[in-house]
Length: 201
Image (tube, rainbow, N blue to C red; front, side, top):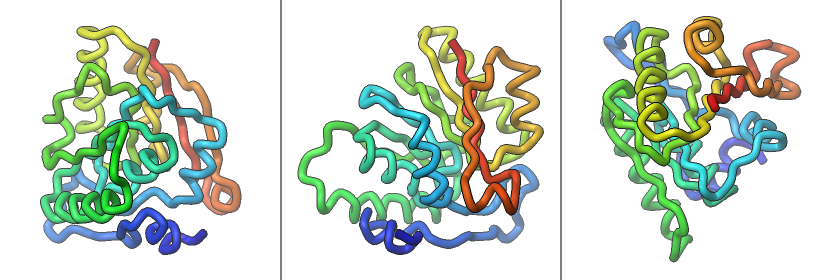
């Protein structure tokens, strides 16, 4: 399936990119992770129903809907843009129409990533270069503080990883690289087309 067909299957609209006028140097444009990349990641990286995923810079919510549809896991999207947050809520309403009951939740919060209060059940954290390394460091600190208070194994998943992000995790935190997943057909043209998964605990 292509991007639009996948969206239609989920009854959502997430295709396209969006640049922001007067954009801060700390925040990047909206662009959803390609479905073919997500399909590739989850061939080798597995989620359990008890997992709770947080997507930082969630945009219109593609990852949350994809994961809920495929794995029935709980997912939270964190988005600072009020406009994208509203579009995510519209997608949620459309997605829910074909589902009478849900074992796990999907929710979205409109806030700065560094202000999100990490829940003690959150254990998988996803980043597609949503913001600067300075904000990333604050978010990782929040995750580590939460783990200190409520011990649990947690994973950080980076798509299209920047050197800043990976170097910080490897040299400035206890996270260790668990696996690399390259996206066939895309990685050969651009070696950033890959996932890096880091684990703590």
